[in-house]
Image (cartoon, rainbow, N blue to C red):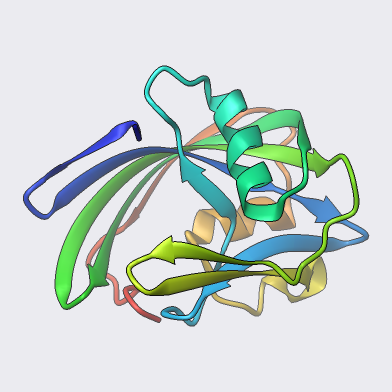
Length: 165
């Protein structure tokens, strides 16, 4: 069971995300209902350590095992999201880990992520990251300059037109 809850149109989620950079390219995802990219991420289950969740989530999305290199950032993210004509207000706490695959990644993967959405994975050259729409924006900044030590960031993107792209 996910570590999160819903109260009306307010949703709280505890998540993990993996930053994977190889050969000056970063691994990102998008789906058929958005025009932007995002890091590979997922929910932490109740009773699950965030490091274990990060390895599990990335393995589920790529069919490859991962090692965690280090914790990069903890982000408290506030944003609005419209789904099926309903606007939701999100508050997420996400642990971002720098991760490395234990074998070669094959990117012909597509994942059913529910609600009629199909997620696909893409390698994006780091040199192109600043020119693309990557959300949350704080993750884009992180990819361009990996923090030297663990940072905590409060990121508020509410009331911005960042719903469907």
